[in-house]
Image (cartoon, rainbow, N blue to C red):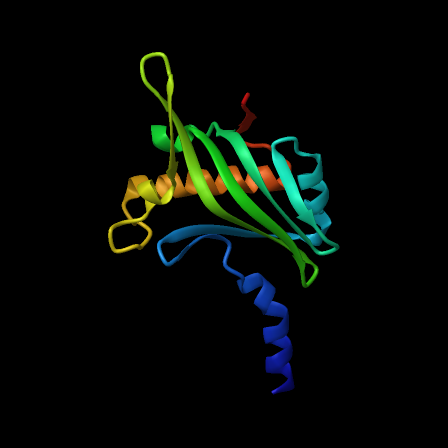
Length: 163
């Protein structure tokens, strides 16, 4: 019994769900980074991530306008993004949670009209479940890679945009 408890204790962080999950029709992205990554320092140095509240173990903030330059997703998915985020230091790891993910689309012949849509419009079906078709899965993979790069500081598929 003691061995079972110890094995569960050490495997729980590895079993944490990374990527997207659906919470009542709202998409939530979560990723666990090792403490050696020092995500809090990464967030503090990124000009497009704004920290509103910072405590010893948690940072809460938002991103107003970040360009996802992933070439794999559909055209709508490759637009600018805005979202809220929380970074928590839990059990020696950093857990980043991103909510309220919105896609900023600029439309029209002279791009004079801006429309902000929740990403659920593109990735959640009418029964409030994440779509499983190949296009939606490719788009989810694109956004997952984008967000992973934003918080790891690798900046893969990320470009700063002007306000």
